[in-house]
Length: 378
Image 1 (tube, rainbow, N blue to C red):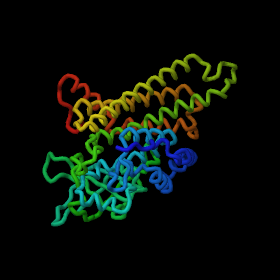
Image 2: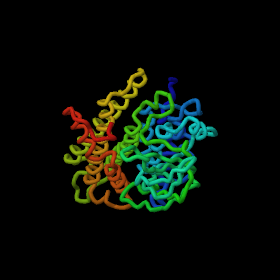
Image 3: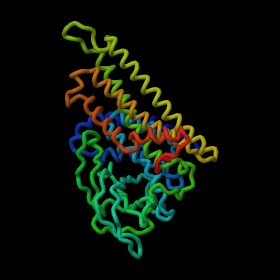
Image 4: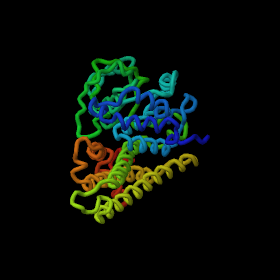
C-alpha cells in the first residue's frame, strides 16, 4: 500500500484544533458540533480515511486514524468522539456492493450516524422493511447525511439488523442530556413508518462485502478502539494543563507552587507512566493485528482479545490520570469555567460506555484460563 502523510500532519489540522478549542464552550452549550467543523473534518480526510481507493477514499491504516482521534480529543473530547465515527465504512462495508457503490458514487466524504439500541421490530414487506420506533445515543447525528437504526432479527437468537436511510427521512429528538460529552449531540432518532429496501440493510457484525485488507480488521473491536482513544487525548490534555498552570501559580501562604510540591511531582510522574504504558499497549495491539492482516493472515482470537483488553485498560488508566490531575489542582479545577471540569466530565462518560465495561476484564480473564468469553467479545 502506498504510504500517505499521517493524518496528524495535515497542514490544516492545527488551525482546526485551535478553532475547536476556542469554540468548545459553545459546542457544549448547544449540544452538538457545528456543521462547518464537520465540513473541515471532511477536508482533512476524517470521513474518507477508510473508504476504498476505488471509491475515492484513502484506505488509511487503523493506527493512523486512531492517532488523529487522539489529537482531536486533546482539543475537545466531544469533537474527537464525533470524528471517531469516520470509521463507519467498517459498518457500511457489510451492505451489498451495489448499495455501497451508490453511497460513495458522488463523494467519499459521507457522514454516517447510527443508533442500534434498543432494537425495534420492523414489518417485513415485499421490497424491504417498514420501520417505526425510537433509538438512543446517535452520536454526531446533527451533522450526518446517512442514518442507521437497529431492527430486531427475524429469528430469535440472531444478531440485529441495521437499516440505513437518508438523514432527512428521520426525525432527531434532542434528548441528549448527560454528565459528559454533551457536544456529541447523541440524541434520539425517531422513524415513523419509514420504508427501507432490503438492500439498504445489513446484519450488524457480519462479514463485509469489501475485499480491501482494512475490512479484515475486527469491526466491533475497532468500534471500541476509536472511542477508547478519546480518553487518551483527554488525559494527555489534562497533563498539559497542570504543567502549564503550575509554572505561574504561586501560593498566597508562601508555600511552594504546585509544580514544586513533592506529592504533586510524584502523582504526576505516576500519571505520566500510566498514560505512556497504556498507550503503548493499545497501539502495539493495533499494529500487531494490522501487520497480521497485511501478511495475508487472519487475526487470532488472542490478538482480538488484546484489542479489547487494551482499549478498556487505556480508558480506565486515563480516567485515573484525569482524576489525579483534577485533585492535585484543588479548587482551581472545580470551577465550571475551567477546562479540567469538562475533561473530567467527558472522560467519565467514556468509561461508562458498554464497550469499556468491567465485562471486558472478565472476558479477558476467562480466556486466560482457557474459557470462552461471552458472545460478541471476539
